[in-house]
Amino acid sequence: MKQKALIALVGRPNVGKSTLFNRIVGRRMAVVSDMAGTTRDRLYAESEWNGVAFTLVDTGGIEVTQGWHTEPLSEDSARFLPMIRHQASTAIQDADVIIQVVDGGKGITAADQEVADILRRSKKPIMIAANKLESIKLWDTAYEFYELALGEVFPISALHGSGTGDLLDAVVHAIPQVEPADAEDEAIKIAILGRPNAGKSTLLNKLIGEERAIVSPIAGTTRDATDTQLKWHGQAFTLIDTAGIRRRGKIDPGIEKYSVLRAIKALQRADIALLLIDAVEGITAQDAHIAGMLAEESSGVIVLVNKWDAVEKDTFTINDFEALIRQELNFLPYAPLLFISAKTGQRVNKILPTVLEVNEARYQRVPTAALNKMLRDAVTKHPPPSKGGKRVKFFYATQPSVAPPLFVFFVNKPEWVNFSYRRFLENRLRETFPYPGSPIRLVFRARSEDRFGK
Image (cartoon, rainbow, N blue to C red; front, side):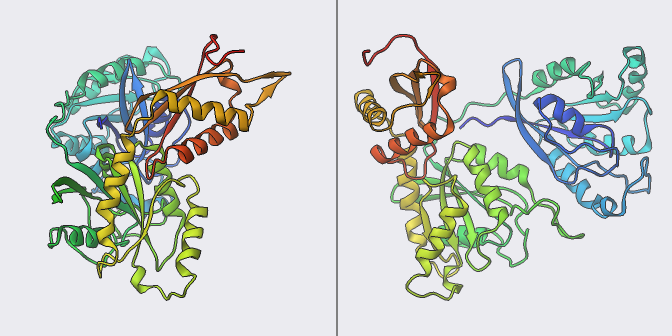
């Protein structure tokens, strides 16, 4: 799977990082406020410029340690400053290209200098976005930021968009060339994801049979995504353990923030994701959040209900729990579900066989004739939607790619194919050609020729 470059926006509080983030991704995602310290967690989104795709990350403002506060901080935001600093530091460490955002109207501050000192140690491509220069007449004032000795300075207005094109041209030009993946690497890459203390490191140790990861009951012990090689029945696996993902805004002072960036990068490299759910605590909103992130990616998914040994059970417990998970994670109906105990090893031996099954499904190809027979049967059983007396007409379908499987349906009115009918076709596809654990993508395109006849 191709890993996209990671572009990090960093800088002191209230210089307009979130506004620039929203401008680049083309929609309002980050919370924008005049109060410094608004952005507490890294926020990320996929974007592209001139055909180059990348992942953009907004960070909380880096606050200086000497007591400089250029803008007022609420008591609530101030207590998050150490964690905001760590968030940005992690982004700097993981980023391929870094943009330091500064307030072009206020000139260089001591806080900007300290941020620059942090960035200078990163040895990454860095550029400076001198923001809040809404008038082009003020752009000459941006050049004083060359004193930071980091890289090229770009006068911009994130609010109006002026100057951002030149900035993005430089960004995509600075993205390091990624070496092509080794074609002989046939290892199935597995990312282990879940909330803090769900048992990810314990599961990793049980799978490899030795203490390779630090195991601790303290949430957030694992800070980095680490790789471990494993061979089972002749098949190579790469296990990627990641830091626990916490809920936004629910971190107490002194507790380290989650490293969601590394979870994203792990997913970009993974073929299969193992989502661990704590059976004792039950399914939470954060489990659903992580599952939603998985649904948007192209990796296969297996849901593991961990600590099953610690749950008081009767004859109906497992069925009731499965029904609850299917209800709460209804956007992952295709994910296999295993009830395990990483601590005792209960059903852990079923994980790798299930991984092989899901990986095989990701590469499954449906013969065109069989696919179109399924389509004809589906259309006959449940006619497509209509509008103004005219009905959507399906001509034929094809599967151009795998991992994940992609199906293209040629129709006369693609825009009339609503969500319900898309879901109906996906369900019929899965009934006819099971794809356990694998997402499938459906695309509808216009075609005037009727391959099925009038």
